[in-house]
Picture 1: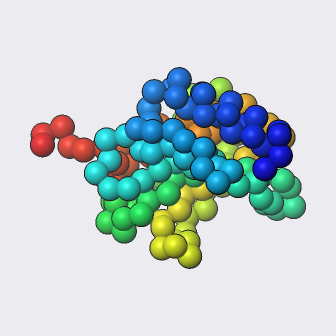
Picture 2: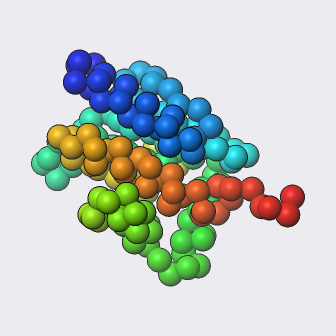
Picture 3: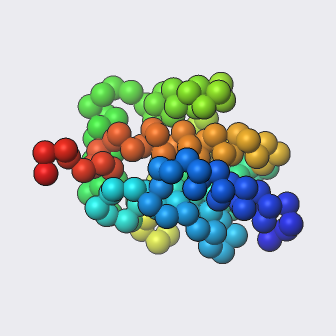
Length: 151
């Protein structure tokens, strides 16, 4: 990991802690991992690793869900609302003063973890920070990411 990447992760880690919306914040294997708060199953927000998207260097920001049922509850909420993940994320990005629309990839990775992720320009650390906070705000309200108040 380069000094620039290390500094970015340290800066993002501090910002994630300051946001006070994650259960835990940790840097692991060159990636930032922020565990989702209040969720009963394993789910976390992750920044990294750097990659390439459409020929441009990017940093991946996303939500990772280990439990199939939790992932399906998120998907069902979006399906029933008639919205698209990109629309919901765009609203939260605007709230973060980042007026852009990011593609949201959704797939199951080789470790059988359900992934929702977006490519963010690698040369814009502030955009990465805003996208992480927007991801949390977007997905917190979907499916079973927050326990019912009635329980």
